[in-house]
Amino acid sequence: MNYKIEITKVNKSRLSEIDFDKIPFGQTFSDHMFSADYINGEWTNLKIIPFSNLSLSPVNLALHYGQSIFEGMKASKMTDGTPALLRPEMHVRRLNASAQRLCMPDFPEDLFLQALHELVGMEAGWIPQKEGSALYIRPLMFAMDEKLGVAVSESYKFLIVTGPVGPYYPKPVKLLADTEYIRAAHGGVGEAKTAGNYAASLYPARLAMQKGYDQILWLDAKEFKYVQEVGTMNIFFVINGKVITPATTGTILKGITRDMSIQILRDKGYEVEERLISIQEIVEAHMDGSLQEAFGTGTAAVVSNVELIAYDGVDMPMPSIETYKVAHLLKSEINGMRSGEVEDRFGWVVPVKRETAKV
Ligand SMILES: Cc1ncc(COP(=O)(O)O)c(C=O)c1O
Image (cartoon, rainbow, N blue to C red; front, side, top):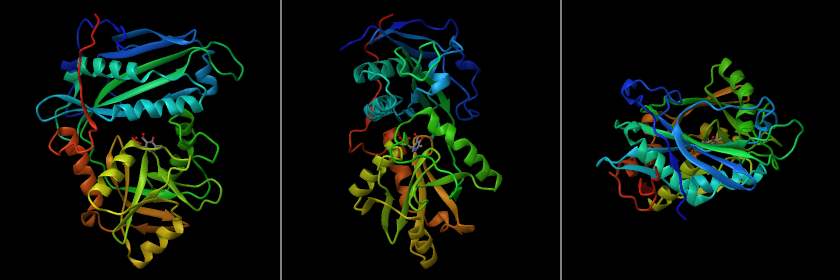
């Protein structure tokens, strides 16, 4: 279906004010945003408008009871200058899985893709050219009913905002495997990309930072025994040449970079296991020298190496980052596919098409 998206352009772009050499993550936003409203059971008011503030009731349901979900994705420029998205259909499917868990309406996949192509096509000038830089894309949906009392909202707003993010040169992270706080329990909302999961992580993350760690390596909620994920990344280990990552059993986010990493590695002949991984197994592999790599995967960093894991009062330094092979391979494969320098063997790269504009 081809939707009618009304477009109102800014009078003057802010693009010339942007220093692309200094774009801290999440603080600069492009000229336009996509907006839609869910009213009387249908998505309506489909528009691309200047990036602007919203007007919200103090009794907006999302502010009080947390019906709020989002996605995080990137557009980059291929070496020939064509803007490209990476697996956008996976993001709308995950958004809709989150929506279902939070009793929110589905957002039509075809409308999501049309809006994305249209918006990113308009904002192509905002996609940084530098290697490792990208246009970060944040689709979000939240309740709009105006009342108090825990209830499912009947109206919603859906937005897509975008902003350039600089080359991400992550320094290796120091992780604390926490045995006091949890991120998600079975039966909870850990698999959904919903605001409350991130709110719940702030306090334990702050305590970890006060102790000198960068982030928490979450353990399972029942026994504090099994490794789950890290902040905004899924976690991988390489032990004796075999790649292992926690299975997605309902409490961790089904990362799209995680999925790509598994497929790339299997295609390259690596053995990859998705299973329960106890923190004890990591301690033992560290002690007997079979732990070769530990790294996180996610849209923002692609791959972020782990320098140290602390558990039970002991700091375990990971092997020297220079010896990491798998993490390095994944980063260059995924970034290479984005730029077009590595063949897109899986059909993940989607060049942006603007053929739907209705002004
Ligand atoms: C909690 C959490 N885990 C993992 C990830 C990695 O997911 P993806 O690779 O889809 O960005 C993210 C980022 O979206 C996240 O917020």
